[in-house]
Image: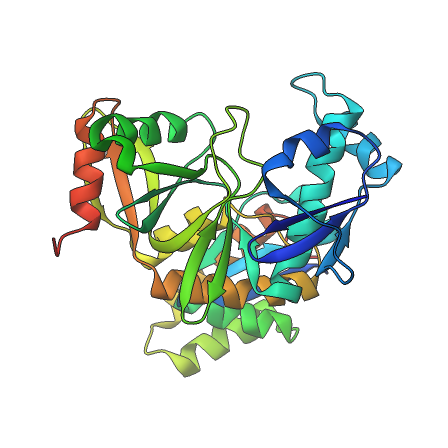
Length: 87
Length: 238
């Protein structure tokens, strides 16, 4: 899984936001805000993590049950796919 | 070629058409040997602007003025620590208030309510496309020749007191915006960066502006009370 070229995340006033540059912005309008977990997962997606690795990372970082972590990751990935952010 | 001064910057404008000279008339200065920047719009940029403006017919001269300003504004963050915020800025009691909202919400209507309610002490710095720039430790709002179809604005500046995001409402109320509200609303009123360099010049400025300037959400109708509620909400210490 990989984040498409042109999508970058930045922190403004404590908020993580995803911005689309150049080509990427043609199919993407507006701004996606990431919560803390979203940012955590995004940073790992940038380094090329697969879904299973994301779940493992989440379990390691946060005190959360495995089925909830799996569900969170699946929802997050689906959201990014829906916004055409993942390759 | 002619020269203007805005936001304390001298800009040479290498124009093709006369419209932009007329638009900039209150900002024109003598020829400057070394301007801060030289701005122009290419024929291709003008063509593109015309083809993208589908809701109405625009002349090449008008399109040039839009393209030139966009080209200026793209360079402001990286080169001069300044940025455009699509908003209506007024000055009252020596301080500037920037009202931002989606087009058609009623920014112009709201600032005219301030004029009606508070009188001649209220001055419109820019009705549509002011420039924000840090001067020392303060963020200032600057008038520019590009100030919307009503041409509300003047060549002046004032320290920015607050950003106020407008929403239409039955009754008037104001509250502080949460940081996530402030960020998402602000990001929809800026010139979206197209390159990583533009992004990384602009975002630290926005971060600082939003961290240091109070942001409010004003639900307002079109009665004069809206101006009173806005003013009081942003001046709780007075």
